[in-house]
Length: 310
Ligand SMILES: NC(=O)c1ccc[n+]([C@@H]2O[C@H](COP(=O)([O-])OP(=O)(O)OC[C@H]3O[C@@H](n4cnc5c(N)ncnc54)[C@H](OP(=O)(O)O)[C@@H]3O)[C@@H](O)[C@H]2O)c1
Image (cartoon, rainbow, N blue to C red; front, top):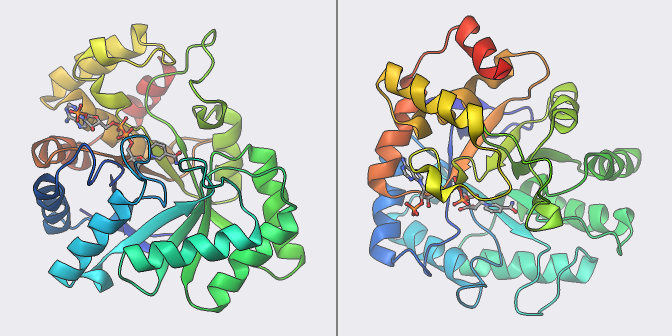
């Protein structure tokens, strides 16, 4: 797996591993197997949150299990650790107020048995807190060395631009990575996203990121396995022609459709109007091997343009 130097100075692998279900639906044994396999392949970017997976447990499970693994393997210095703050966990308070950010960063550090986070995300916007307060609180974590870089997830594009304008005008650290839903399939125009916050990145958002030279970590990159089994397609995605096309093209190339989606996402910055995308997905070790074949799948300019045109 190749490494990419991001504009914010982080050197990350081409794909990121999602740890959302570790300790809840993914057992410790399975989590260790996929983490070890990912690292063996040259992966280094691992994504979690202070609230994963609170809908299936307490919300502490994922960070706690990652902390155990980092300590058991002694590999903290080889990992780029991304975690988040801002969403609710059992009514314990969603938001990006100074007090909340200061409390949760220390909780994340404690659970993950580390003294720094490489990439700290605002998990979602908090319109009830002034942007100045949020950006100042994040900046102070950077100056204290608790956090190296900042990202934003599930923000409207204009709000991210405002947050960064606020930060830069005050000499504070801006957001340098966005995390948003993106795959190959289009959203279904007549179905609202399940949650308003997690809409699929549209062309306007992608052009904004391209213009700002800001990478996108795409979550739900593999549409919950629907490229392999279309019956699993979440209702907010349009399957249709695009799904048929990518499945047929993958068969021609002799790879799984999910691998071709990874090839698409890791190459779309070659097309006008798209940013650098780092696909983020959860998987088993066996699925990881299949998906990583996308990193060896070559796409010509003509193939990329054709995929884009469907
Ligand atoms: N920022 C945010 O708001 C946000 C929101 C959601 C998630 N995330 C992050 O994004 C990560 C990924 O999210 P996600 O798990 O929803 O992503 P996803 O890419 O849509 O789905 C991953 C699922 O797809 C299936 N899959 C993967 N590879 C496959 C293969 N080769 N063949 C068949 N099925 C395959 C697996 O499902 P099965 O286990 O059923 O086989 C896997 O659990 C999370 O872990 C989390 O870190 C962030």
